Amino acid sequence: MLPHRGLDAARPFADTARMGAAHLTVDLDAVAANWRALDALSQPHVETGAAVKADGYGTGATDVARKLHASGVRSFFVAVASEGVIIRRAVGTDADIHVFSGHMHGDTDLLQQHRLIPMLNAPEQVARHFQSAPGHPFGVQLDTGMNRLGMERGDWDALKSELMDAGPRLVMSHLACADEPDHPMNAQQLHSFRTMTDGIAHRRSLAATGGILLGTEYHFDLVRPGIGLYGGRPFDDATPVVALSAPIVQTRIVRPFETVGYGNTWTANVESCIATISAGYADGLIRGLGSNGRVWAGDVPCPIVGRVSMDLITVDVTHLEEIPETLDILGPHQSVDDLADAAGTIGYEILTSLGHRYARHYEGAA
Ligand SMILES: *Cc1c(COP(=O)(O)O)cnc(C)c1O
Image (cartoon, rainbow, N blue to C red; front, top):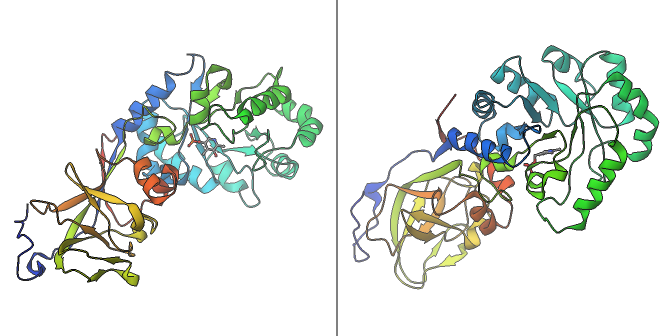
């Protein structure tokens, strides 16, 4: 703890200037606990995989995948083939690694060398796969209304028997509105998926985190949660996974009518103590936080004032009795979703924006 000099201090606290990077803690035991909790929501015959794309939602794909593999996960999902290579290196040979973007031009070598399973999304991908990697495992992704990835109904009807003969490892689709349980799109997509796939002899998957929470009829043979593993909505019972704190670099007294930060967007009404912390939008703390974000000194909230800069955030700490060494950005009082709400975004974006400048610490590594 630094001594709090009070607002009547004659000069800024320049002599307390310190440096240091913000500190990110990833609790891998919490990731494993979240996976077990989500796994317990489906019936025992349903396999629970894990989406580890985008560097494990920003938390670190290698450590997360190792931990989940040690916890029993044998089906991983990534967005692109290069991410699959990292997961293969992390977990070894006895896991299925599925690539949502399918078999893209130029992917063949990576898919074969690392035994990745492309989820074929379109007739061109089917042709490419059967031509360039005959006999190599594949899955099929169907579009059931989201109109983002996956084979359209007409193409599926035309290719279905050929694909079924070749034996896909998984036939899947993705829900557009699963975080809104009452949204009619959920039942509509479930119906489309069933219409397209009922009666096939191959394993099926429809649910990510939101779909798991919709109930067992959405589970089919395999569920593939992402965000819930990392402690985010809509899995409200999740254990928090990330904690982030930033050191105070400097504090100063700002007098009435003085301004703080770029663009002079904040003006002191009263004499105020402003702390500058070492983290900014280059660390994923997006500028939108400037308007109503806050950080925490233990149990005490402290408003962010002025604009978030690339490497620094300014915080009003006038009300603190003592100035701490660090302020908490994510922690017991502020979840990923709380921060997302303050920034006008979603937990997914907060997590995947987490920067690489942080000193990272992994708890419970496998
Ligand atoms: C990202 C993704 C998932 C995981 O979704 P969450 O909402 O994070 O659980 C599952 N399936 C597909 C196709 C995805 O793109």
